Length: 252
Image (tube, rainbow, N blue to C red):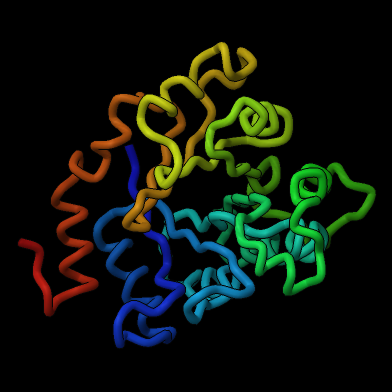
């Protein structure tokens, strides 16, 4: 079981937004032995929101050996070619540590901002994700230069709340499933990981999961019974992380 951190892209209280706030979070994650740094993606939000890929680029040098993941990037709205170029640049600069998590997004405001019909998000996402995969794996007629550093290309993980259609899409297009504890309970994870829901080759897909506090968890072979307990499994790491980020408010 591995833990990661979601970059603080939005304001909480009067903390403000700054490079120092991002590097403080990444330094704490690295010192606590966490495995990944991730960033979400919105164009418009109800609060000020830093651009996710830009934030990941800003902390590459401080991230040590941690993986850098988009969770999730709006490939339908950014476009597969511009997003692939950004992700490959991050992969080169990080020495091959990028995971491309993508999804259609759930905010209609993001679609309105770029004049794309929200009602067409699923077919647009299918096409954009397939094109992005080809670009990241070197299977496209368009050749990105430079190409990814990671052998086999940048891994592509698809977001799904665990529906049958969503997991079929993961099995068809992706290297891993980006799940969400906002919308999927532990029994849902167990059901989704069963052979009735995924082809045999994907019975144990990689999972990248975000909890309600914004933490992240990834594993290549998941025991669904452990999902609600992953932070409790390493209390020292989570407590050290909290203390590093909130020295004025130590955990009870």
